[in-house]
Image (cartoon, rainbow, N blue to C red):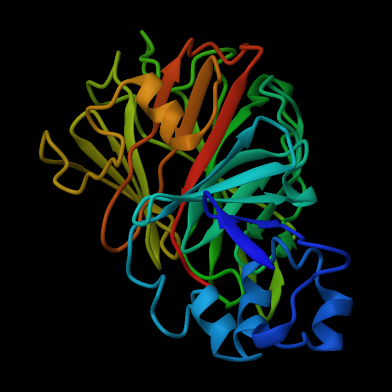
Length: 331
């Protein structure tokens, strides 16, 4: 018999060798062979389980039925560098648990359309080589991006954030990495006294393959009064990427490789935060964690923007440091 506890599947046996049987039906052998853990299946295995009979259909939600589509993003989080991942569904107030080797020793950089952009290393020091990859936590698909090498030692950078302009399974999608040369300050969270020196590294997918060479552009901040400010958001679309910074929108178009800078509204009307107005202790209770620091990267969709937030010590050196990213729910 299978019971559901806090949104994560747990097994419970009564008597000798009591498993999933009776009205639940026998599971297909093919599914048994390829499943990583039937007591905690991934989303790709949900559909196979739903086809067994009506009991399984009721037990597992379906993307095709619209159970998860067009709703709030879910929060993917874990202790930094750990493979023990948690998925928080803010609509149903449920938690899902999973051991995911793709997350081990990797760092969240951002997400777009259900795909998470990640770095192979959780290190935050300036360096020459950066290896990144794309990961879909719902289907466990993973794509390695080309190695980014910054050959000029004076421009060695820290990769802070990453976004996509579309579905990485399709051509004409760009992967973008936002970098800066600050040693400690993360411009998403901490204002800097000088105009920020920010770069965007980007690479395109064409004819089913990613280009091997990254292109780079610098965000034209020097001629605008944005000292002492933080980045409000990074918003990708099909043909451009927009950076909101101190009431300015910096828009870069990939085809023309041109920047357009314009004034924006002081308050972004697209803002959603399920933890708004809650204390750090209340958030920890909802997520069933007890860290010194919780840092969450927001995501941008066509419907809403989730802002970055950091609670706790905010120094990146905490013994107990939980990092997470809001992920749009897509198969």
